[in-house]
Image 1: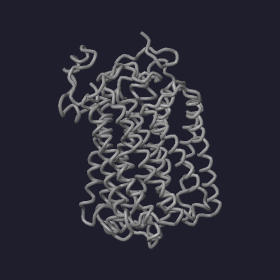
Image 2: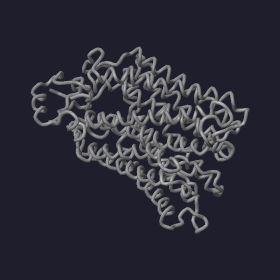
Image 3: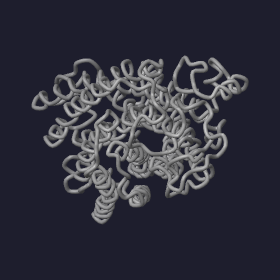
Amino acid sequence: MSAVIDQHGHHGDHAHDHDHDHHAPHGWRRWLFATNHKDIGTMYLLFSFAMLMVGGVLALLIRAELFQPGLQIVNPQLFNQLTTMHGLIMVFGAIMPAFVGFANWMIPLQIGAADMAFARMNNLSFWLLIPAGLMLVGSFFMPGGAPAAGWTLYAPLTLQMGPSMDAGIFAMHIMGASSIMGSINIIVTILNMRAPRMTLMKMPLFCWTWLITAYLLIAVMPVLAGAITMTLTDRHFGTHFFNPAGGGDPVMYQHIFWFFGHPEVYIMILPAFGIVSAIIPAFARKKLFGYTSMVYATSSIAILSFIVWAHHMFTTGMPVTGQLFFMYATMLIAVPTGVKVFNWIATMWRGSMTFETPMLFAVGFLFVFTMGGFTGLICAMAPVDIQIQDTYYVVAHFHYVLVAGSLYALFAGYYYWSPKWTGVMYNETRGKIHFWGSLIFFNVTFFPMHFLGLAGMPRRYADYPMQFADFNMLASVGAFGFGLMQVYFFFFVVLPTMRGQGAKAPQQPWDGAEGLEWEVPSPAPFHTFETPPLLNPSATKVLG
């Protein structure tokens, strides 16, 4: 069965179809008790899009407040709730589950496995997200409103929050458990269930990036759980981990949080690198340049991500030796990222490129992500950071890597693989409208923020002096434009394909694409690769 909503027996293998009619649940049971990796992948993607919309509404409320100087729409306390919840919902509700949705859908198809290793755990790891998401969104309606301590949940602010803080902590624990289960599943699937001849070094890069990401998740999610549990005991059980009055240290919280937080940002970008590494070779009609170096670069990024955390903390009064260490470590982690960018450019070099929507998003990703990377290096220079810390420059930087990095790659992946998921081609013109609208409005929103930051406008404030008015107005207009483009994407690109409207997709819609996912019919049957396929030596085609 495919990701198409209403489909009964329209796909290839009728023997399969008949068989599945006896065994697979139908109607709501199919989804509630789903153990099929494709169904679970579809649910993850729909959940993450719903969360993207919720997080987007919060962002637009922030931008509406900042449209003009003075307090316009919300009071400062609610403003802080909005900034906090926008961050938490986007990171843990939108970006991460979206990548896990892609992993669920694509990893078994790419390695020639029948399904994920632990099908029921897969179901549980998805359904845990629903109460967690509801708890985060519902915290607005609790006494005192939602947590307003910033998405980083810094002490001592967390001590002052109402009961919603505990709900938020609980929600994050649940989401962390979901992530860890998903990661275990991905690791075991990749290491144990590859088709014969699919060696590790013949895997698609998407599988590689996810394997490394899954190890990162297992390493750092417990650290976050520790930090927020200490916050919880400080709030209710009389401990003083982060309370200076009792001999604690609020800066210790920052250290523990960012030891999770910096690997976390790589958790959100490495799968994006995997998607882009699948798309650029397909549309350049060339093999990926430097496959081995890409694997090594991804691994080195993951290892180095553990020793750069305190570049978020240059202004907390660390010794200059510490500043130097974290500054140089951050410069070092830029090297493997640079290697990746050069490899993508070298893949495109003299390729016979065409620019369908997946490629547009991949090239858009390349430009804008690289820019975000450079502004990140600027933030990582301790003397410069002391000037721009906690200004809008930082907001500009991380939105360039998170939106134009992770989100663009997710869009690119959607346009690239949705023909395989749904069995129909998306509308190319609409795809291009979505791309150009998103690219232009994104830059209108976030480019001015660099200048606001350099001029000294602090982040997370509901009001600002008059001199920042023009650029803020511009950014707000851009934000509404960008938000509308994503609504357009859902109603005019995603829904028609889910309904099965559009030209019928061939098995292999992209002539340069390689990999096992293009060896199964479009839409991908409910069960694929039930017997391990016999592969060709390069592990890109099924023989026989």
